[in-house]
Length: 186
Image: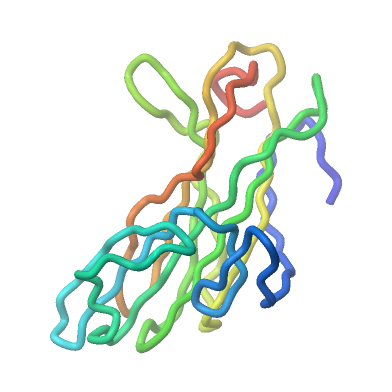
């Protein structure tokens, strides 16, 4: 994937292995970095919505109704990385969602956020995937750095959607980066 200084956030299906290795654990049958925040939401067989978070490699909350779920989805977002330099610098991260039960079709959205005096702001517009009936989706994303436009704290967020459940909670990366990339993507 070629990156330029133009305003572009690219999505690509990511490939991986289902075998855990040191520092990784299996979540919903997929390899995830241990300690990553997992957001899980769904609908019980009685039609009640639920939502909670936990860390990969740790037990789910004791109140988690997974056994009673008619449909559920789990989302996770990788740590954000900063690559390149100067006018050719960019952020890179990965988003994943696994759904089971009567979830219908699923998709996800992501956005880079940055700090401001009044709270987080979008560094670019929300970008998303197409709907699919696949049980697992995994995409890589990038966002160009507007070099020299002011120093802020940056981190990506994501939210998932399943037609049989609705939108899940906004989940952010576990890390953030302080960089001089300005207030908006170039």
